[in-house]
Image (tube, rainbow, N blue to C red; front, side, top):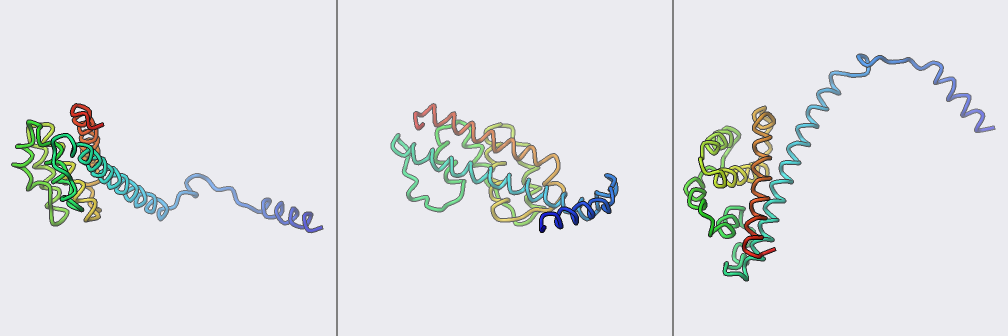
Length: 179
């Protein structure tokens, strides 16, 4: 009897249900929530990508410690910068990276954006991408940026730089027999 009563109420509710058009179904507040969720998702993905690169570089540095490089034991919980300097020490572009190290930090959204724009002017592709990756890592780990510049065209550039650094680091590790 219970099943029959439940089915009756279900069909009665279904018969009274209003059919919504797509325009009625999409609400402004839901669109705002979706836009905010998209920003949070993109931000989180970039943060995960940047920190994954940092952990990958730590792994490479540990593997390289037995092959003529110093141990990373003294680096402890240091930032990405000492890892880049250690693992890429024999690369020709590392001097350009060191010369532009000041671009890897910022105090607020405006300084991060300015440093990012300045980093794009570095001629050496490896130094430029490692500077951008360091800046992005420091930015997303320590700050949450909500400005439009972060989620616009520069978002793709930042992601591309991190991917470049991941694959370049893998190349260096393979070249030095660390992997």
